[in-house]
Image (cartoon, rainbow, N blue to C red; front, side, top):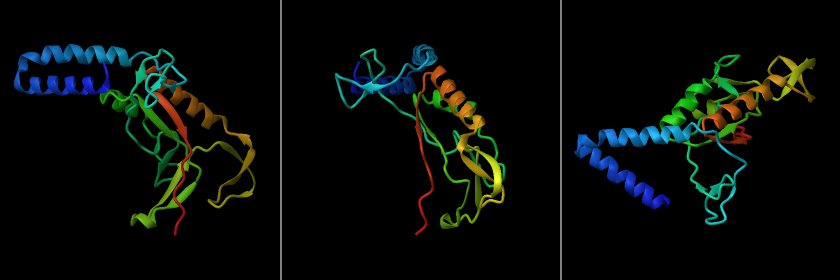
Length: 185
């Protein structure tokens, strides 16, 4: 079934359900089937689909339509406190599944703090954890020990690995993205 046919059929079923409550069991069964499919682990890595290069495939030859929702703190916790509140990644995955999404961009964060005055919020935000350990040898600009850029922080990479695997196990593909606020100016 191509995407256009799938979308047209979905609209027909949705409109029919609004008119005829007798279709509710049919739609419920379709939803259950979709949920079972979604619970299968994502298979990767993704490649460009040979049959239609606008799509990806997981190696099965089947075209995949990737769709998802966006939020910044899905790898690094971000907030107005130090440390920032912990992001509920499981709830985010629940949201993705509830909306039949199969793709997440996992945003890393390179800044340790930034001020949102440019957005009229006038609030200092903190991001944690970071890829490098803080071992000292002086203070960083936030008053904490300096980072050692030759040593990775295992906590950060364990979190990243755990979140990629959790998404995969729910049938959600991931892409790790670097992010940083735009320079002021």
